[in-house]
Length: 212
Image (cartoon, rainbow, N blue to C red; front, side, top):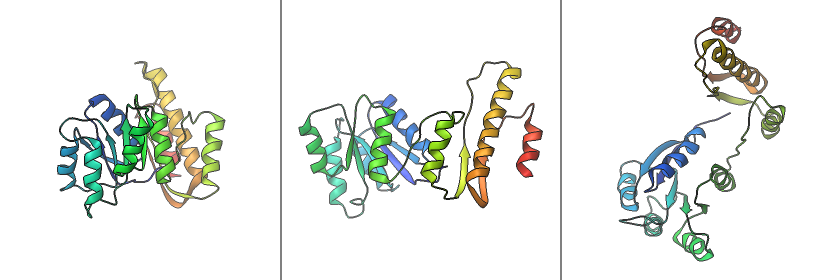
């Protein structure tokens, strides 16, 4: 289950790291803005406000410490939570980040689990990593919901593509069926399901079942 989390900014001069962190946030429903330096981030924020910032600390032009201090000193941006992304394991660096105004830090090399943990601890977001085909993953999702109905279920599940339609299509339809079964268990009356489905064998039957 996923709802919009608003707009977030990733401030990072290393493209691969920026894209990885942005991908984690997108999967949680965030709209993403990217900036490669503190100065660029400040300029973008003047025209496009955000709800969350994940920022590298060591960058050319204007580093993350200085940029975060400027954000904290401006009444229009002081409310935005900033999570530091740093390669330093030194306590001094973490203390400096906190003093600058960062609410948390994620160490480099960035691990998906670390981003999840920072978001969970400070923004009330809960993540479940796993395969929905596994009973334990389904039970963990249901336990988090605590029988509370949800408004929307979004499924972007997909299989590894083999290139053979006779193999790929049944696998894809099975994942779509899992999403539908899960939605029927947790959606409130009148709730919505958005699911990725490929046209082919089983599609018409699935569509008929979906509308039933």
